[in-house]
Image (cartoon, rainbow, N blue to C red; front, top):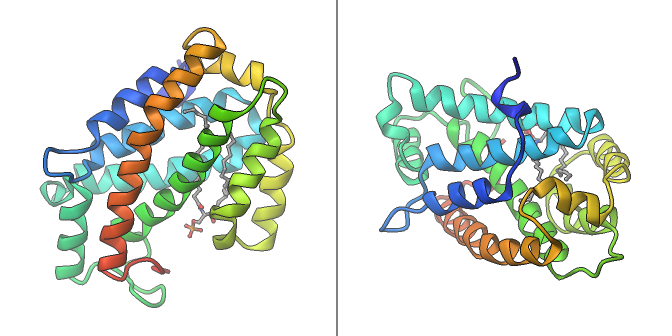
Length: 215
Ligand code: 1Q0
């Protein structure tokens, strides 16, 4: 009996959850945001245990958000926008250094938000790559352009080593479970604008509220 994270990945499913993320007035539903990451973690887990340290951290962050979502104040966590308002108004965020709120929704989501930028860059490379394209190179380029700046040397080193263990493009596409390569490329083309919009909306909100450097 496995947990949800062990189940089979399907790109369509991730696409669907990211579609559900945005409300009519462009707010980001936390529930679906988290579900999107769950789907991605399934994918990561199917690649093998060298990625365990990455998926462990992501699972941990998701767990923090789900706990808030299901907690007493859960109704304040319906969207990222409402979460930010609620946590800021109630002094629930460590703004400059780690203190009494080391696991606020705001700082936790910021970590996933930064990772979403990596995902966007990586998937765009994957989508436009040729058959011989190296996933490890695409992945590390995307990482170096985004997430890596927030990671200390050891993490960058470990991530770089893990990237080298990524399967080639054909095997990678296989795991996505949406059929032949052309279809994977098409699905990625559908998924990217959605991921990108969710990213942009969060980015603007966090910038406006000066939350980009939460410890
Ligand atoms: C496919 C290969 C996946 C590579 C993932 C790239 C990200 C590497 C990140 C490595 C860092 C993990 C160790 C922990 C870092 C934390 O210190 C850091 C900061 O948190 P904190 O609490 O210490 O301040 N945490 C993070 O930066 C969050 C990292 C979350 C990474 C989530 C990655 C989930 C990966 C999903 C696989 C997607 C596969 C793409 C193809 C799917 C097609 C739609």
